[in-house]
Image (cartoon, rainbow, N blue to C red; front, side, top):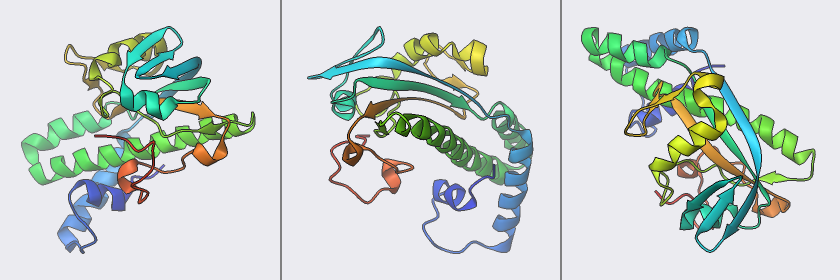
Length: 215
């Protein structure tokens, strides 16, 4: 799995403009090092799901979130997902924050792009499993999106046993360690026209989609 250079530049704030040779060299060096330093891991589990009004029930987890309820409306099941690329990016940021701030910034962006690429890969596997059963995926939705409170990270961590299964811990402020980690809820729907194949809502031009993430 490769670090997406184009997506890394997007995280760095580039919007189609060219980059100089020095920045390209730093980007390639960081990407190569990050690929070697990373150890992607994931775990996901399917649960029965209900969404009515602003209330969501996934397994035994009760959530009040208008945005998430809208996303999961009509879904009888949902997948809880946790994924990480490991400690490599965190260690690189720590190292380069002392020796090379430009590289530290690129590591942050490359790490964000890399975890997204990895989660897309895991989601693709979930999609194949679901479609074999005649089900389709809704957009993945993470704590902190819209009105889905970040405080639910702890409950997702408990249900998925993140520390035991993929080595990710949670701080008192509900931040994940390693930092380049993701948790998400993915609804399963029998209606193909309500599914989504986008990487992220930010990259999707369908601004009138009723399942679009509200940030």
